[in-house]
Image (spheres, one colour):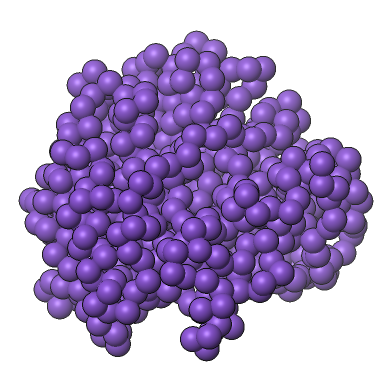
Length: 536
């Protein structure tokens, strides 16, 4: 009998999961159980989200960590709240400095793209405002798995191996602690192999005891500062001190009667809304979801929405065009008029001024959370603070070095962000949270999942299972291997440059929880991940 995880001779499927008292959907089963345990102890959906999010930094360190950023949309007592727990650039860092070091664009790894981390402060803010259980209690499962170890799941093991090849022998003193922390046996953990990190357990307990402030004003902030100074970094304790996440109002587009909610910039949820606003002016063939014409229209709408997002989204304090203008019906109608029978070279318009983890939770009281946190590209910057288990994100990679760009790197500025939690409501009532992780695939995955449910009437699991496409640039797209070849040929006939991608992780990994009018919850989890829906 085999204990490996990549041999499946026969098709397998995931079915919808139902419950009434609570539900947690994550891309790693242990984190889902941690969230469900919080519910069973008397916590609410917010407690469950914090417990699961903290646990995810341990059990899926390939995509997020204690040095992550985080965004969340919370449905509480009939109202939506948004929390932006993204960080800012160090005071010593500027576009001029990076260009003087010989870079034409922001580097992806090392100290230069490291920003102030926001996830830990975000957990504390969620817990303090809306939670029922103590912060220490919520972080106990994460500390326990870090201390005692856990069996690594298959997809995460594969992502871990990619990180090992990238960082285990990488030159630079800042990269040496990576292997000590994440490959202590000299290799990436294999599927089913136990990995533990006692140093991370101690760090999590310190975070729990101080409600996160140790990461910004205490000994862990000192450790980050010291390692940065020693190995040529730019972040300092003074950058971390006083950091607090921001409470914001989510923004929406009404798409064919359903309100689709996203976080406002600096996140690129605006791209999803822009594409949906364009599609509001275009008819899709609802009887034949997999028609080439539907593929074509969705791709073209996404291209146009993304081009606007890439040009205009930045720290909201420096945006030259307000988010509302990009999703205004009049502007969306003009953009929709550009979509014809042939693939176009997309370009930004001129609106008038004036690897990430995703999880979702729900409880019996009607509260629901859509939460996403990320180190960005696999293992983020690759910088791990020695003796702490803290892996630092590389969100600065989202900055531009072009002085004319609204997203140009500047001291104390927030960068363009790819992580976006989504939420659906209808007639003022919550339907539920949804999201698809995966860097620049996230808006594209969200668009496809939302259209699958709203236009094509798919249930949440169908919506996640359906084969996906990704727009790369210009007229270039890639399709999952499971997309029929006749669709690929039809898209080529329309002028698309079509490629195939066998790596399903490229196409994002999502979770969905919906509630019906009777209060019954239904959840779905991504077939491209190791996740589960834990239900009560």
